[in-house]
Amino acid sequence: PRCPAGSGGGGGGRSLSPPPPPAEDEREKEGVKERSGEASCEEPLEHPPGDGCREPPPPPDINQLPPSILLKIFSNLSLNERCLSASLVCKYWRDLCLDFQFWKQLDLSSRQQVTDELLEKIASRSQNITEINISDCRNVSDTGVCILACKCPGLLRYTAYRCKQLSDASIMAVASQCPLLQKVHVGNQDRLTDEGLKQLGSKCKELKDIHFGQCYKISDEGMIIIAKGCLKLQRIYMQENKLWKSNCMQNLSEAYWLNEEPGENLQAF
Image: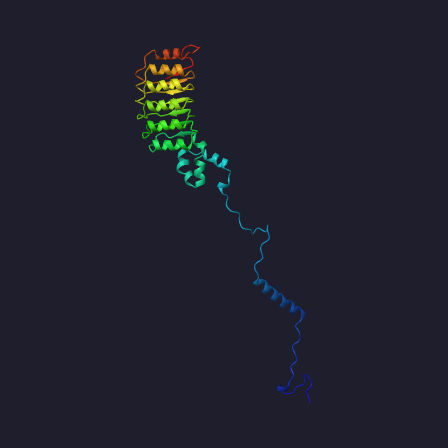
């Protein structure tokens, strides 16, 4: 005969009943644990946009500016800063630094690395040069100036102080190849003579400003030819020119065909 449930028979004969089902709130807790465990195995959720956790934008890049703006910035740099600093940053900047607008007015004075070969390269790169200064450039010869003049017919202002190695050949090339020339400053050139001035007087009708101080081989003859041919002449600098005669200014004024009193519109120093 079976012992009734719950009766106190021997330990071996007791019938064990299944454990009671867990309470409802306990089942809910277990479900939460399971769901949290599943969620931990999944990929982290992406942060929705606008929550302040997006990656920072890339840093600003100056090369994103339009080329016209960069050219404007570079225009505030000196020739040395453009050639020796900015142009070495990257190829893009190098190309910008070689833009023709930067090579219209060149001050190469006192740079002994300037040679005939460099002048030729510069003139070939930019034939729009309107002004150049090669004062104290001792490694430039007549050949380099002749090449420059041939490649830059729009040259307006030519300065070459103390270039004692240059002769009439350079000034004759500039005069014949650059008819729009307005300013010639070539003081302290011992080899310059009246022959060079004759070319200026016959070829450069726009000439306004000349400086031939300490050019000891220039005489009245050359200056009168300039005065006759260059009717727009406004300024002459001729200090320490030993071949000038005392009445040279009067002769110049008369040759200049002034309607006013001689020398009124002509400044001489």
